Image (cartoon, rainbow, N blue to C red; front, side, top):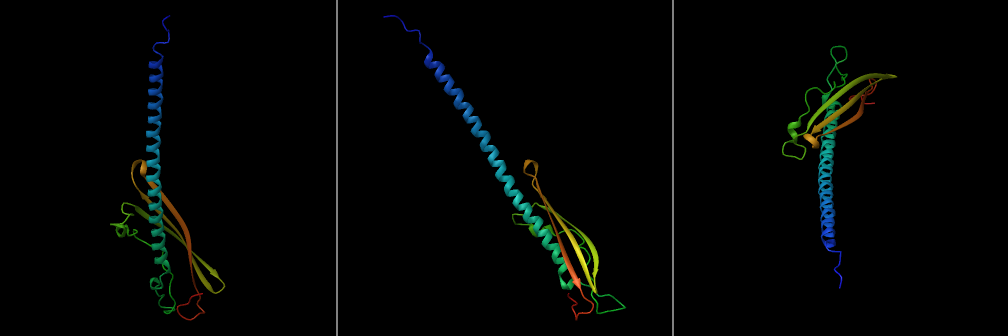
Length: 161
């Protein structure tokens, strides 16, 4: 019987399979790492959105709260002023012990006065920016909204339109 020349074929097949399996393992590791980073960033983005929303709600309360209106003196002491744009930092200390801890929130406000007939209308443009996280997990969310308040000098107190 002649000697077969196919010796070593099994070795080549085994090395080929090891290379393919190693490449597949490296791909799976990379894919898993990207999935983990994406999920973490998504959660941080949701938290940043909620922090920015809290900033908008805080600013809207500051301008819509009836107790925030001052009184014009001395010409018409019963006529309430419109609140000024919210000043001072947003109270991020309220986030302590929550999932929003670690987010910095800034609130900006632009006020514009308008007259419609005998009614006075003030429009507040509110912008809340929340930033949190670090490195590849850093996220920022910005929310813009407008809030208006109307006073009618011909209406009884509290002069709402």
